[in-house]
Length: 94
Image (cartoon, rainbow, N blue to C red; front, side, top):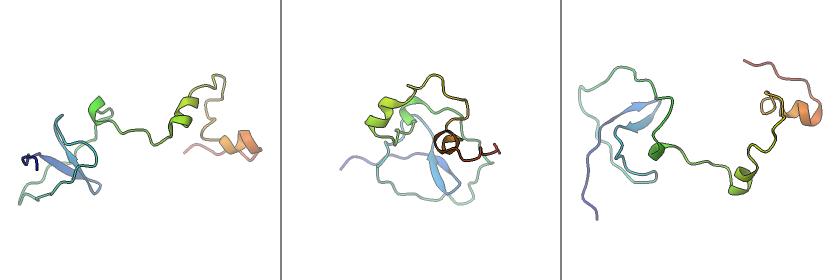
């Protein structure tokens, strides 16, 4: 068994976010101890994550191979896919 390590972090929307670049990889079993009286102000999630912390794509390699091959698609093609494939009314952007 590897030696235990200690990390600090915070809870955001019910998810524990560990701070630091040396956080354990996804899938690592952890135990959480809540520190009494320690709360932090609302944190903003960074817009970009370090390469070591980016989520892996859930798309299969076969689908990833097809990503970006259509160069002349309308800018709203993914949002209004049903319109372009089946002719349904376009959705209004929120």
